[in-house]
Length: 103
Image (cartoon, rainbow, N blue to C red; front, side, top):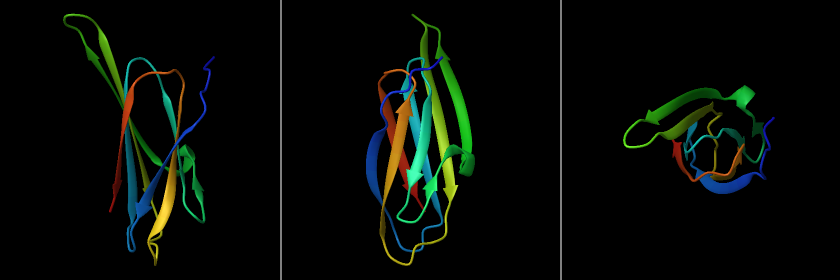
């Protein structure tokens, strides 16, 4: 059973005419993450997103784990710049970094 921590929220801009939002989350350790995107008009869950996952295992001098999840949303291009919110919920507390691409 996973204990889900409170979602971490990050605001970002989506420019006029954008067609995709891509979120890349890299976790440094054994964990998982759930991605959700909120626009002013729609909430995108992982069921709405194209998901790519990758686990990287370092073996020397000690075992290390990195888990990468990339979530892509194909969106209706906004007619004005919008503020969106990224919500990340980690299954365990580990250091992580996030990249957000809008194009």
